[in-house]
Each structure stands twice: as structure tokens, then as C-alpha cells.
Image (cartoon, rainbow, N blue to C red):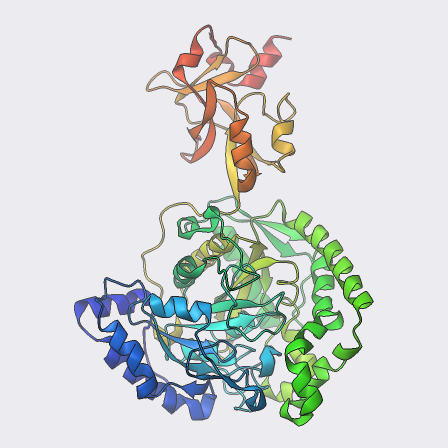
Length: 599
């Protein structure tokens, strides 16, 4: 069923404000569309009826479109996430229960004006990456009938890709929010663990689970994350979102960002997947990115722990009792995946934790000097026929680049990069350190704009790009004196995990002085008679900047310094009243040259 549509957040907001359509009219149209699509795609387990929708619509009609940031925005909910008054099944009828209250995230979204349309299909107990492991029907791909939707958040991806919802909620433990996104031309945000509440979510692995957003664009995912990343007292694994990862962090990635690329890539023989990946790599380079070869060995070793290590016992924690009491109530493929869980003992659990910690130490060190990493989302797509013949092996293939992410506590976003010759969408994944979600979304947004593909429904991305610089968990600091590489105070940067980004020049708008103590320079911006001064740019973790600032003695401080390329960065400046007794050394062009002149 081909139909053009545009359900993006900004598009609907404009239509509501103009009076072109009302939420009630739109929701009823979408409900009819969902019912028409469901026999073929099996995307919903439960579509809300008119009586179930009425309280949401009536409550919304007490507001104006300007009152609520998600006014009238339709969304779908993976059926392992609670919606009050509707059964939660986790795609297992014998497990189903009536939800007494909304999951925290669902409650947040409804309060912001969003309207739930229904509960979507999934691989049973969120165990699978393909979307076919459900008694409610296998989910086929939104574009190509011979391929799966991807899972486990199968129906959630289809709801957005097929034009039933503006966004949808999935979950992601092993890749369930990223694989379906890439298979269906969507952005899939798997935020940092604990950033989005999992209270009211049926666990797969409670220590690893994340709720995810499926959207048409990275900009929409950024908006949704900013609205919902609030620490939840009802979620023991909820975490505070630092300010550097707020909505203000979403912007334009600055030229010179360093992105890792695995030194050895696996495409399982698919030349088209390989070509699309390298096309995405070239586009990041065109945006000013610098590729860095990355030893991927420890990442892949960590990935094996998810199903070969003790975490399979954590999955058994939810379904195990049902398997023991009513084995036929659980699909045989799920039972097979979990069969070794009862034999996992405490010793093997601790052994797995020790191995994971070793891998994390190695991986964190590799990521330390990078802004993000680019990988395929999966080596190659697999067909429905292949899944029928080899259900476990082919499912594992889809998780090759995804299974390590939550174990290592990284944030990730899948983003479309093109279409294969048969029309099947393809995507890549950007990942990075915890709490760099908005930065990753910024890179994904830039990738979508430099590569303006057809969005779901046939629309294209708009021209309303961000204008300010994107921010991550590190801040660049301009130094001009004793903190230069190899000089007396440089250790203060290195002990804070700082690393040198570049040696460069300031804009030709500064005078440089040797302060009266002869140990420190002061760089002062002037309206005329200025010169370019030799400086260095150092990258510091944002969490270390406060202690660094506190240790800077007067008359020096941190302000904004303009570089020769016109970029303004945080850097050392000097108060004018600190120049008493100082010597103008501007002619030397920098502190290091002045020191050398003194012998």
C-alpha cells in the first residue's frame, strides 16, 4: 500500500496551528490506516478503539496547539511498555496482564500532548532482531516483502515507516531499536542507559534495557530526547542528564571531528552494504570529519558476552517461570535461546562481569580521543527465507555490530544512508561515550542533510538546519602560556585527561604580555594593532572544566578567544587591570617564542 504522508513533528504542529486539521480528525484517519495495514504487516497487537482514544482526545481539546510541545502528535508503543487500561503482552498471550498505570515515559509523552494509537508487535519477550518471532504474526519489511522488518521493535518501526505514527517507542537491549530503523529508512535513537525511564517496561535484561525512539529525522529524535530525559525516582536505573547533553547541545558538528572506523569490517559478502557504508564514510569526511582506524577486537569480544555469557540468565528472569510451568506458551526459538540460563551460576556471572570490565577499559581508552564511531548497523540484510531456514544464525548476523552497545554503556543512533538496488533501505550507526546523545544526533542530522534521501512518505528533509555548534562531553580550551604542551603547567591539562587537538593561531586581534611575575602571559583583545598569537587547542572532559577554572589565579580567567579561522572557543584571557608592570611581547608572536628568546 503506497501513500504519501508527512507526520513529522513540525509539519503537524503547523497544520494544527493553521486549523487545517484537528487532532481528532487526524487520529481517526490514522486509526483507519492502521487497521487497513495490519492484516498484511502485523504491526499492531492492539489498536486503540474509539472509546479508548476518547479520554486522550477530550483532554487535548482543553488546550491550544501552542500550549503543549507535542500537541496532537500520534505515537505508537511497543507492547512491552505499559499503557494504562490496555493489556501488555510482550508478544506472549500467556504472560499478558492489564496495565494499571502508564509507564513513566508514556505518561510524560501524554502530558506533553502526544496521543497513543496502539501497542505494537515485537519479537516475543523482546528476544530477537528480526521481527518474526511473534504469535501475533511475523512483521515484514515496510518496503520489500521478502525481508523482515527487523526486531525486536518490529511493529514500532513499521508504525512510523508506514505513516501511522509520527514517532514510536521501542526498546533496545541488543540492537532492537537500531536494526529495524536501518531496515525501514528511519532514525533509531538508543540513548544512554538510564537517560529515558524504563519504569513500566517488561525487562529483557533490566540492567541493560533502554527505551528507544523511532523517527523520520534525527532532529525529531533530538526534540523527543530533550523533552523526556528526566531522572525518574521510580526507576532504580535512571540517571541524571548532564547539561552538556541538553537540547542546546544539538547543532552543527564542527570540522575536524574525529570518527572511528573499525579497522576490519564484516559485510558477509554483501557488496552493496559495503558500498553504502563507505559512501556514508565519505560523506562524514565531506562534513569535515577525520576518520581514524579503530581496533574493533574488544568491542566484538564484549558483544559475545550478551548471549554466550551470564546475561542470558537475566533474560530468563522474566520468562523463566512461564517456561518452566507452561513451556508451550513460549515460542520454541525463544526457549532455545534461553535454555542454558538455568545452569548459569554465581561464579560464571562474576566471571562475565570481570571480562566485561576488562573489555570496557580497553574500549573506553580507544574512544577517549574520538568524537564518535561509525559502523554498519548490520553486516547485510537477511531475507525471511533465510530466517526460516536458520533462525538463530541469521538473527545473530543482524547483531554483529549492535550487541556490545549497552554492555559497554555507550549511546548510539542509527541513520539512513541509502537504498539497495532492490529498494531495501540501508543505514549506518553512530555511537559514542555515554551522555553524548545530542552530539551523535547532530552528526546524524548533518549526515541526513548532506545526503538528502527520501523520507518515509516520500517527503525530503527541510532546510531548517541548526546554526550553532554541536556540543559533546568534551570542551575545547585555548591556551597560550604555561599550559602549552611541554611547559610548566601542561600537567594540569593532562591529569584531567586532556589531549592536544591542534597548534594554531588566534585571530589577528590580540596583544600578548608577560605579566609582572614573568611566569605567565596575558592575552588581551584589542580593537586595533593586534596580531595573531600562537596558541594551542586542548580537549578537556566537560566534567573537569570546573576544577580547572577554579585553579586559575587572577588576573587570568577563561572567556572566549577567536581563532584565525573565525571560530570562537573557550580560552585564557586577561583582565586589563592585570597588565600593571607587564611587558608587551606581542612581537614574538607567542609565549614559547618569547621564552626561547631569553635563552
